[in-house]
Length: 352
Image (cartoon, rainbow, N blue to C red; front, side, top):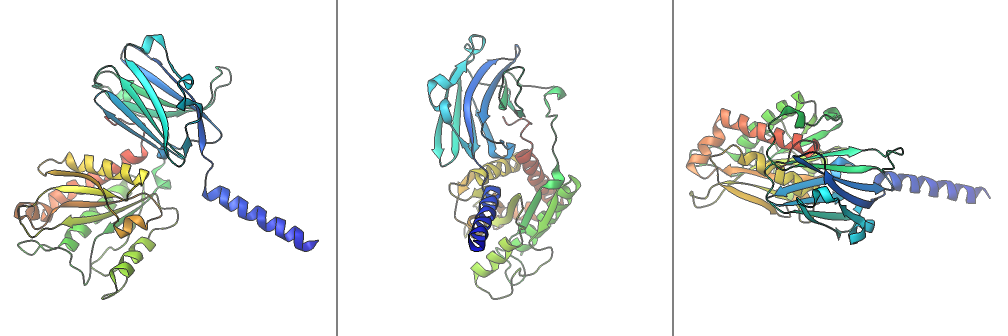
């Protein structure tokens, strides 16, 4: 009898832990599009069965198409046309809305507009409202034209202090990484930019964990690459929110140029992080944007949180070596990283 009781008790503990580690997916119950005002169309995506986290929501507005990627979400009835309503006042603006399951527990929504959108999209969550007979909703406010007023800024709660960001300055110690024409090393640039980013992120209220803060091997000199890289991954605490690895590119031909960002294949959140980092780095100007790419870099595929690897520029390119060694440019790179992290969590702001 005692053995049975102990077995049941153990099973309850296992189920409780499993429920904590793997949140139950929410299920979408409907989409309603209508005019909010003369400049804004509101799209309300209703759901049930759990809590939706804005960290699981990615939006991409390009010309006349808004893509909404929802992680840990099932499409439910909205995969059928009966689950989507475009009100009469919005039909001159919204052409159609499609939804489908693209991966396990992942839903993709496409909102097709009849013309190019010059404004942006603001994302927020609304709780269930029984008096209005409305369930919990993901709300997308789409501006038809560019917005220039501060009222469009997100006003929701955003607690940075709960977010732990891991910064991984590439190489270090016995591994110099790539070396530029005048001797500037990748390990020194990656560390300098990461330290500056740490200061900015800390000032913004985040907790920052560095895989290294000085010129050292994280594991030990002479160990296999996998051992060194795993030591970096192990620096991330279990509740880390993001992992960002900072590097410089290199090529035998000194004319190779530009920056790029990476994510692990099929990593939805990592892909979004890489895209935001790429967009913010591109805003600096002056460097060719080589795009956002998928790759199986060790620190990304073994990270337990969304991860991205940045190639800040080609240190083997004379012009880019000078930029990468510049204190002012390093500060700009650090600011770009901080801006991308802010955008990753602050879904209420614009993503146009």
